[in-house]
Image (cartoon, rainbow, N blue to C red; front, side):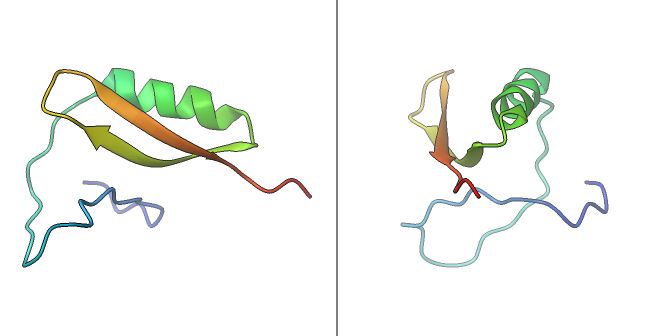
Length: 66
């Protein structure tokens, strides 16, 4: 993983105990979709939902407008 300080972690909040990283999967389609969504400065990706299928749901929130 890069030394990027802006890493966002999407974690299962129901999990109890210690977790470990280190398994990386290249997913260009997910990266591009997040970038496309967040190009609109009023949208922020706040999570990814996994239901055991090949489909991931991208969870978004509208950001506050100034």
